[in-house]
Length: 337
Image (spheres, rainbow, N blue to C red):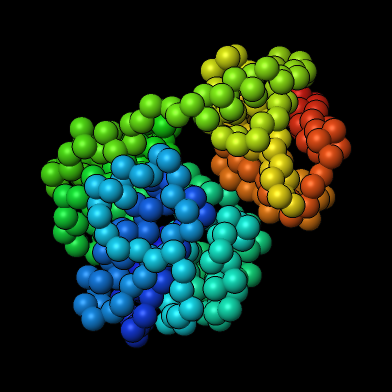
């Protein structure tokens, strides 16, 4: 991991760049956009005359305050060619949205990636350097670490949005380790404003999201597997939010099915207790496997992952495959303990 990190930094420092693009996942969340602007800061500090385009394919409702506060230019479309493309906070192709074609049109030697989700084949085959650390709570903390290692001095507003990204993806430090704690401590020494960072990601749930959660709860189907309560439901939007709400109701695992246009999605959230006791990693062991079966893109974290399939898949068929896979993994886990 250390050698890949060094290669990533060497590429950033030694490259001869006139035009750089930075792209995160579609419908950027606070972690993705903070990471993008953090990488923009690094690029411009290392190469003062370089042009940097931050490319944004949609802004999530959680991110609107961050964008308004940081007030930096970004692009929603481009036809430019770039000397370097930096992908942040994503390594699943379908989640690059409208900029997937841009990435695919460039030589992989000019593409690098920094992310904290589980590694996919895309990262291996479409980038020259993929700096991925699944043990990190956010990509923003990885970008912050690069800034500090380069001995750069980030302005307070950048520190604040980076902390917002860390807070958002760690669920207000619900997921916390010593590395994250040490980095946040350094942020305080540099003058980060915690109250501002928190306010940037605070928001009242809109009616559409609350209604989606209620509809999702009303369609719950649950099954007991060993000591675990697994819930299946469907909703038209706000899948991740709905899945988190189902965990709050009492489920150990929430699998949420949805379709739109010619696409099928499956989102999952699980408790940390489930992962700790079963060692089932939903990004690697479930979504990646299902992506092969259904010719889609799947990945994510141990307790939060997603699958995108570029066609409509019958709900019962996907449910049978997902729950069947979970059942087999739980049985295997029990037989080995």
